[in-house]
Image (cartoon, rainbow, N blue to C red; front, top):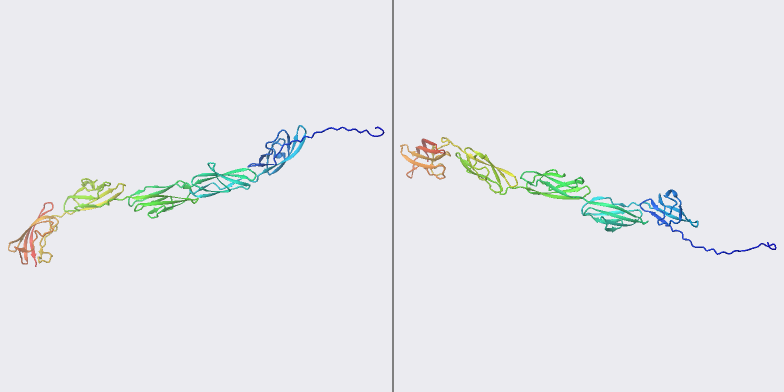
Length: 438
């Protein structure tokens, strides 16, 4: 105190304030496709950090903790300069996106050549980009129209409003429409065959429809049908799958034919005694033959064998063509055996040579006789006619017309003597009377 007044003094010092650079934290971090996110990527680790909501963090006292989010959360952090014991605070908002799912058209089996619209959807979507299986970009937007000609997969890549990228894949499979008809496609006339539609994707078939319906014996609506066409016919099957796709196939059933057509004959077809017959059926190099009975033939495996028979016989020939089909033909040969006696040898007991065309000649009638001699006498024993005739004959040679020396004889009873030679050489003789009528 000086003179009752306090003493006052002052000291002046210069203090320098230096600007301080605190670390910069992101305002927001996004949890893309997960609920885990780091709060401070690229953190400056020279500072100390202490975060709140420690229960959500793997470590609340590190620069870049990993948060496990249940919802969008704001994290406060105290940052400390450990050298100068200064602190500051900051905050980071960790956003948990609501739904990362990209909904897309389901994998499916589609018809070959069909146009399919692919649709993608994400609640937070910003942009959509489509890629094929080769990684080539094929479109943008939430829909994509594609023409399907082969199995293919498409990836849609969605970038949402938070900058997160999500993907999903759709796989398109072309309906396997391989169908083949199998079976015996060459049949013999009158025969049947079974056709089968062999379908690669048989488990996905809904219906079978065969056409034409002509000559389908059974099986319409199934994968197997039995047919018996009379002529070569092309059959089609339309297969409809459960997904609406269709496929078809065709096959021709050929009916074998005998060309040239078959016919059979015998020359002669009637014998009056045991003898030979020339048999004949249509000849063609592509045919094979089997005759029965074979024991009476010179060769049962040719088209024109010679048969030696003693009794009437039915000959059967089986002809086989190049396709293995057979046709059976028959030929009957009659052997007519006549005894060399009456009634197989017959001469009328009267005739009327009056020029009316009826019974104008006296002739012996018989299929058993080869030739004969006949002598005619009047009641006084005078020979009025002598004839020699070969049987059969279309002329009247050897027949008596009721004349003598070119003059008509009066109606009367005449005597005759007949000597005939039969088939086989047996002799037949007879004498009797003949009445000449006018």
